[in-house]
Amino acid sequence: MDSNGIHDKCESRLYIGNLDLKITEATLLKMFSPFGKIVSEDFLWHTRGPKRGAPRGFAFIQYDTREEAELAKEKMHGRLACGRPLVVRLASEKYMLETAENSMKASGEGHKMHLTGGAMGQTSRSAKIAAIKNKLKSLEEDNSRSKKQKKTDDTS
Image (cartoon, rainbow, N blue to C red; front, side, top):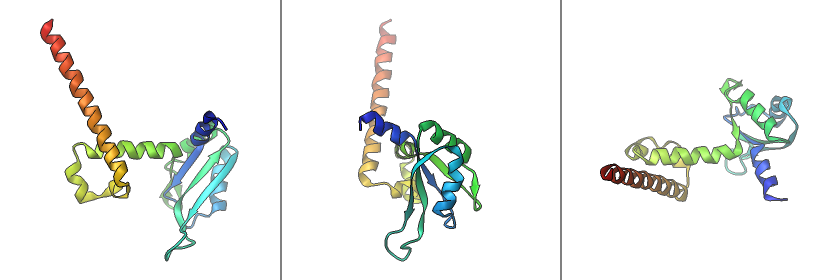
């Protein structure tokens, strides 16, 4: 498989979260099949501990095309299922959203992190460090651009 094929696969794979524990694999497939051909589905279960065998509350659905995945995302995100709003997004977006969220939290809201915890507590230490480094780099680039702009303004 070429790298384009792998990229296309990620683009047509959906993350479905905030699932009520009463929702079964069959129900999930029934809910999402009107939007296109489902190639595969991963319904996640607890594999150990006291909740072993119980659903984890999220799943992944792979559609045949990106267009089908986009349509399902558009129609199903925020829709109530068993009284809970579904979270539906491209699986590739989940990582990008977490990274963006972490770098935003790292800048300017560091003092709040310890009080709230939030999504940061669930992120690995190395991912937090990477997000902070990226934010620092972008701030340094912005700073150097504004200094260059000032020099240009002074000389003219």
